[in-house]
Structures are given as C-alpha cells and as structure tokens.
Image (cartoon, rainbow, N blue to C red; front, side, top):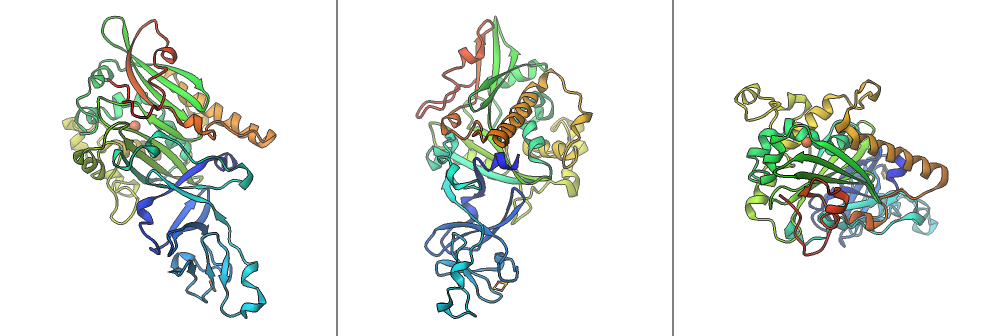
Length: 410
Ligand code: FES
Ligand SMILES: [Fe+2]
C-alpha cells in the first residue's frame, strides 16, 4: 500500500508552514520517512532526508543560508535537491561534496498546499487538479491535523455518511458552516439511509438516499478518489468541504480538511469560523497541528453538554467527534472483529478497490485509478431526484467539477 501511495502527489505541508524564503525548516514524517522541508533563500522548495550524512545530526537544526541548508554540527551544506554543496573540512578540489547526495523528493505548491511525489521519476504524474486546489485563493481554506490512528480507519469514517445523523446531529443544526440548509431536515427525518455505491473511473461514488416529499429521494453523493480523497456533499450555499488522509506511519496520519466555494469568495465570517475550528476544522495545541482536544485529555469530553443535548457524544466539534471515535478503535483496528451492515457498503468497496489496485501495481505495474488528473474533476452533490431515477444518471452533471458553475445542493 505504501507503493500505491507513491503513485500520487501527496499533500505534505500547508504553504503557511514555509511562509517565505529562508524561513525555518520543518520536520516532516510521511510514509514512515523522516524528512526536512525547507524554502531556500531564493524561495525554492526542498524535501530532503532529515539526517545529515556526515554523522547523522538532524537537519532540522540546519541553518537556512545562501541557497542551501547547512548542518550546524560541522558545516556540511545541502541544496533543495539534497545535493551536498560543501564539506568544509575537505579540500574543495577533492570533489568529495559532489559525491554526497541525500534522498530528496520533488515538491510543488498548489492551492495553499505543498505536495510531494515520492515514487519513481519515470512515473511522475501531472500535478493534482482537485477543484479546491485550483479555484482562486480567496475561495478556499485548507487545514490539517494530526490523527493518532492508521490512515485507512480515518478515511473509512470519511466515506461513512450514515454516522452524520447520529454523531454530528447537534452540529448539523448549530454549526455556522452547516446550519440552515433544507437538506439538514431530510438528514434528521430519515435515520436509516439506503446506500448505493457505484464504481467511478477514479474510485467510487457513494450515494446515500433518504426519503423526501412526494415521490422524491434526497441524495447525498460522496465521491471517493483513490487513494484517499473525499468530498462531503454540500449543505445549502455553505462552502463545500472534504478530506485527505495521508499516512505518517502505520499508526498515525494527517487528516487534511479543505473548504471551498466554486463560484464566490469565502466570507470573512466563514473564514473566521474555519480558523476558530468550526465545520470540519479544529482548534490546536498552540504552535502545533495537534488538536487541542486529544487522546491525552479525553478529547475534553463534557458529559453535561451531552445531557443538555448540545453534543451527541459529549465531544465538541465535528472533526474531533470523528477523530475521537476513530482513535478509540486503537491505532489499527482488528477488522476480523467487525460486523459490517448495509450502510458500510462504501467502506467494503473502497477496501476492495484499494487491495485490487495495490495488487495490480505490485504484480503487473498497473498505474492505479486516481493518478490521471481527469479523475480529480469530480464534485460532491446533494439533490432531490424522482424515486425512479438512478442517481448516476440524474446527478451526472452535478457530479462534475465545472469552472464557474455553482454546486448542486439542497
Ligand atoms: S553531522 Fe552534519 S556536518 Fe557533521
Ligand atoms: Fe464525521
């Protein structure tokens, strides 16, 4: 599965973490590799092995100097490609420095996110074209948080839209980024959605159907693009959000959350709410990307709020409600003990497609779905359809990312 991830551009840092040329380097752990990201004095981005090849000091302590990062221990210096530029103790004419090169990965910046590609050079795909990443900057907000469990169980929570009517019911009513949509009533009036999952070129479309007036259904359709991109169906004219889950190692991941509106700038109020941890975002331990409510403080549970009905699980905020339960399963859930039911169909099919793609890559070198940027151009949708209309037909246009066209939403 690690090799599968190495077929894609992966989000690695927020642009705000490397805000300017020659700023402080940042430690990155991704796919179990410990790396250092930095922006050199000319503004070029680099992602290189964390440890100095001399005697292994962490280059996080590096000095960001003229066009390179210098290990403060004995002064070896490296450029953004990991090439050693200077070994001060050796005569320059020996050419020793030239022979030293650190592992490094290409990086690009797009949509407020720094992305890396960690696979073989000859397979490097086109840069990602998810709609959130290509709308103008003022139409988007992106955040990330560390999560203490395997990426897949976090992602499974993201494609399981049946929990919304339970776990998040207080927030759907009250959160400034969710409330007021007509669709919320359909969500609350029918607690037993019927799931219809269909294959799509890049992954799956996970449709959840609830009863609505007359002979209509209220459909919420979540696209899942391999290996780990999702879009949560919209509510009213609120910005649309979704997630990626990127493995740090087998037992930790980074949960990325984006919000964007396809045709208008986010309002100041919306951005303020997002920064304040509303919607799918969260509050942090100051100076970190660890959620303020975390495993070590029992997610700041408030049983009284639960009794009064302002939260359903006694944990505040959608992101941490999800994280708390996903982490509560342990770092890697033992799936032999599960009892899956109809509403878990999306999860079952996503697992199946991931396994199939990982095996095809290993056995035949097949490039997996979701690498082709055409697969990125899907959009989540919420809509009413006549009961006899299959959603793949009825929502066909709504599910396409189309520049300048508003989302389809109820
Ligand atoms: S350990 Fe980095 S220069 Fe010696
Ligand atoms: Fe959730």
